[in-house]
Image: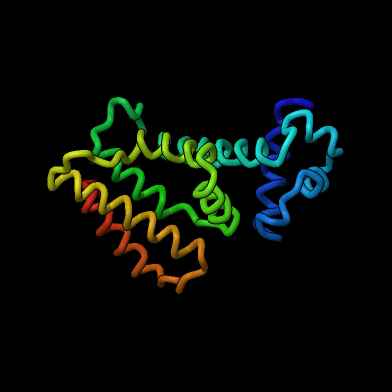
Length: 178
């Protein structure tokens, strides 16, 4: 299989989960959705756990690319406030899906899956050990953005666009961005 087939399989597995739930995600279901044989899928992912880990990495990589593009410079050159404001803007502009929520929940009980997200968050929104008031504002902004994402992912009450925009603006202000 070509490397591009690997991404097709990952995207197919995400579609299965979005449509049918994470319990329906089997190697067979992912292979069928991707239009490959189970043997072809197993060339890259021998087990469901390997597939789940690859999906977590695929989703985290996609998010990190969106964050880096929105930041407009290398993360190493950004202040914590710039990184946090970018996280808020991107998180608020990115529609959440049922599949993403399912994979996030799955990571709670599997340390290897959670590690993917822990590493991303350590780069973009680290939790301070001895917080200053500024650190608390940044963490609060991150948690508020995550809460908005969770509201969307769980099918919470839809927010009218003016309310959503005002909320995102307030969260970004808390993070020190505009």
